[in-house]
Image 1 (cartoon, helix red, strand yellow):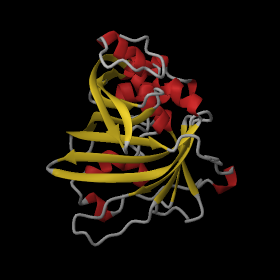
Image 2 (image 1 turned 180 degrees about the horizontal axis):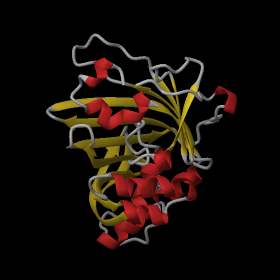
Image 3 (image 1 turned 30 degrees about the vertical axis):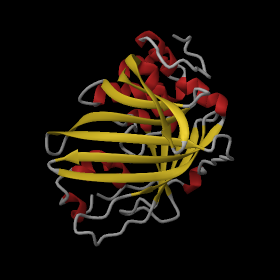
Image 4 (image 1 turned 120 degrees about the vertical axis):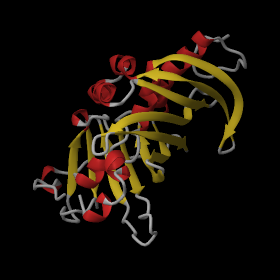
Length: 275
């Protein structure tokens, strides 16, 4: 890792280390009741990922806020996601250095079942090459490493909801939504997840400081997830401290064209990643 980033008290190493090193109702869609039991709310959330697959695709904006040692930083992303193919494309912007004088080129990320591809990640990788990372090999299952949580993985985390409460009606970007708050269990989510996310969520269940993930989820009248915020906690191996991460995913313009083509093998960097 470059010397300048070593001076950041470990926050970037902890949160996006591999990104810079290689980061009453039945519960069906269309629910209109305002009052739900806890069991009903859990069932609604368990179906959120399947509802997204039926929706096909969407544009997405992501935000990941990290706090450690008194330092707080935010990484933002924007792109599209194909829920049927479980593929997405994001432009991820790293924050400036604390001094405010170091600009980073946006990192292009391609999300796919079991893999994360990154371009413009710097540190010795040619500008025309991609870095490929196996998400099941990451201790956080790529829920944090890439600086953005895969939107479909974020929805599949809700399959692990054990407790949830219906908070009430509100709006997200002008769209009426229903707000749910609860806690998801990573082990349970992994057991119920699609094949593409199962191993990554299993890795996260083992790698995070806690397998219990508090969340706030916002679903529209068709049961589509419009916004979800997860709060992760993991151990910073370099400084032996706990890092708190808040990851937010926004989804909008459902049905948008989202053709995501993965790199050919010849375009993937095969050399050693500089540190």
